[in-house]
Amino acid sequence: MQKDLVLEWRQKYAFNGMLLYVGSTVFVCYLSFGLRQFSDDSGPIWNALLWIILLFTSVNAIAKSFMQENRGRLLYFYSIVSPQGIILAKIVYNTLLMLLLAFICFVFYAFVLGNPVQDIPMFLLSLLLGAIGFSTSLTMISAIASKAANSSTLMAILSFPVIVPMLLMLIKMSKNAMDGLDRGASLDELLTLLAINMIVITVSYILFPYLWRS
Image 1 (cartoon, rainbow, N blue to C red):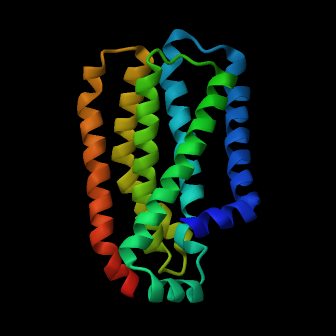
Image 2: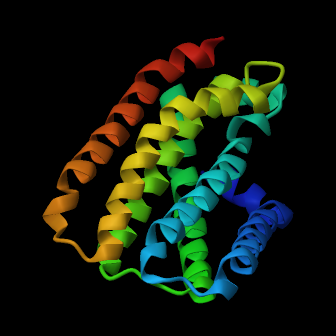
């Protein structure tokens, strides 16, 4: 984690590039929809656009987790660190990075396009679960894709069936928060997302050592 934080601090262009991506995408959404004044039935559009932005931001941010590591550095890590430590450190770092980007994106998005969310704590909880879910899933997929030649394409293909079910539940949960529904209405989605995150972390912890040895 310390190594990734130091690299991110030295190579500020990577984080700044992600902020530029978020800002430019939100601005394009504003030009396309904001000037037309969102009506009461535009909540699903507002919600879907936010999660689309967060999804592509997470893919761009997490794809470099293992792809940026050269062979010599990986061999050095192999000799001094356990594989479980590597994957857990990557997941924690990517989760923190996604939480920061998700919060910045939500604040800027709500400032530019308005904030129709009625239950802010529940909506922030959905952002938290989304950041954790994207980080845990895409980190392991990034490790798998880094072993292939065309890693970027492979990561996009592998992540699609994993992310889509999670994305559907996140959209539903956040929409309930936007409408101000009783929090019990989102209980099934909340428990399912927690279960998926725990399963992905456990599977990554168990299977990554076999991938690491290759």
